[in-house]
Length: 121
Image (cartoon, rainbow, N blue to C red; front, top):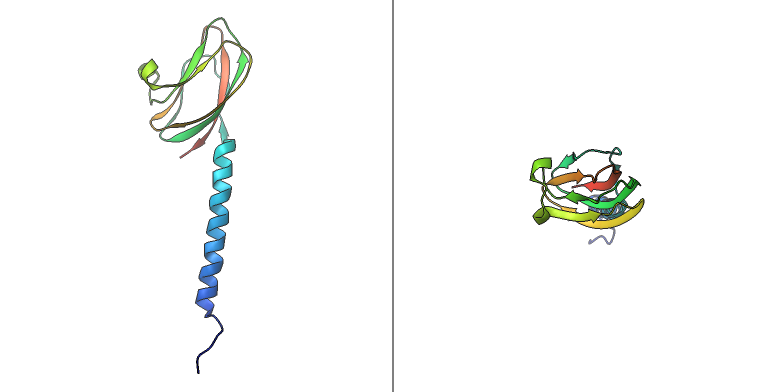
């Protein structure tokens, strides 16, 4: 006689798939909000090597010159070709929403202090 009741392992697989889907939605939300905020820096700084998602830049002290955030893994290699965002010398928050693949470098303008919020991976 054929049973219409699902096998226990089928039910558990369905439950597992639901948990995985909910976890993936949570991870996507965290990426968009950022999971890490760097220290506030006033000198050129390598924040992270590897891949990630730059969410926002917060300028704490404006300084007298613009800065930038770069997709590279060394402060010496930060250049226009790998610049993610120009950071104006104005106190405030810049929403970025940008993927980086090599690393995250901050170059500050003269007298500027800022931090970045990002997600890893």
